[in-house]
Length: 284
Image (cartoon, rainbow, N blue to C red; front, side, top):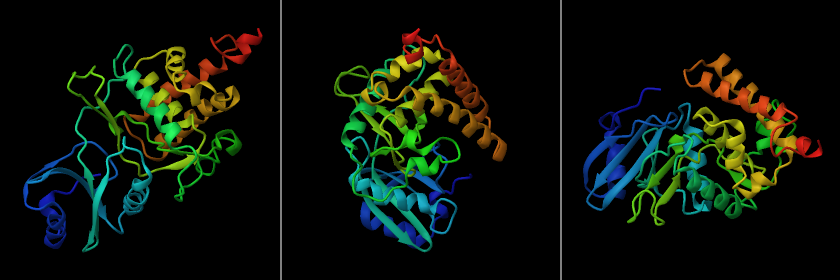
């Protein structure tokens, strides 16, 4: 969707933001992310703020409300929501500014280990699911997979695109122990099995060039994934094929094809009776 420029916002909306931020020095557009009418970095006398949002009655208005409602329950890996502005038909959210770069998911990347560590930590911190209303993942995927296979009591992010991760180096550089890994855009949460977010990111690893067996080996660094039922993982891989095929049929996009191919490769790997680490192979 085309983004709106800061100058296109109603003057009253911009003034309401300034009441929270103080004097604004400059505003820079943020190019990534799809579900926002506006996404900018606001540079103020007090520091930087990330601001996103859109028209209240627009296509994504409910997503902004989701994220604002959920943010107080999230751990430190999610930037803090500092303020909201709802005025003149617009809803804007102002977040703690998360600096950094998107991770490299290619085989051998040093970013893979901290991503696995983050997912493991989030699973522990968000189980049981905080007392905030979120939909069931099983209900959301009811036409793709038997709900009982994905039921659970973990708060899930569910949008594991690498664009939603930011790696901010610490004093030791990218490989330093003090680096921060952020997970942003919690607008589509769900409650479900603790292994689901890891499985969703595993698909992205396959798209980035990993063999499915190697991607699964990465996933087993996360205890929730390592302990996931084999039947559930196999059904999940099959469901991903259908999901991305449906997305392509309903709204064709260039990135859908590679994700369909990655899902098919993972599903074919899980269907093989001799794949490494499977219960079938062990029985053989």
